[in-house]
Structures are given as C-alpha cells and as structure tokens.
Image (tube, rainbow, N blue to C red; front, side, top):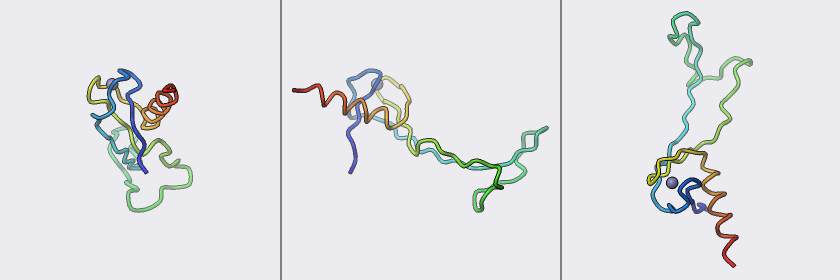
Amino acid sequence: MPDPYLCPNCKTNKTRFNLIEQVATPVRLDPNTGSIVENFADRSPDPFHLPYRGPELKVQCAVCGVIDDEIAFIKRAQSMAKQIP
Ligand SMILES: [Zn+2]
C-alpha cells in the first residue's frame, strides 16, 4: 500500500513529485584513467565489493525542487497527520 507524501521543505506539496529510482551498477575502474575495467551488472562482484544499500527511491518535490529520500517525504506526511486532532 502506498504512503502519502508531504514535502519536508516547502511543507505544502502533497501531489507533485519526481520519483527517482536508484539503480546501482557495480563496476571496477582503472585507477589511472577512470575507465571501467569490469562491469558486474550480470554477476556478483568480488567479496570486497560492498553492495549498494541506499534507498531504492529518491523523491524530488516538483514545487520547490528539494531532493531527499522517499522516507523523509513519508515521515513528514505522517507527522502532519498526527497534528490534526
Ligand atoms: Zn517542496
């Protein structure tokens, strides 16, 4: 079930957002040139390579432009809902 959003910055927008999916591509780079030596998209990286653990979704408020984790927008909506008696 989806959760309502409220922008934690402008505190008025509940409807207009840009959803930004975080798609991590694990790679190994050449230390001198920065070019990709290995791309681990279809197999597991070596054991020393930490997997991405950030949020799956970031959200941009399409009114004020602030970008934050999805949870920040959900938490703000929940805390506003609690203030209504
Ligand atoms: Zn906003």
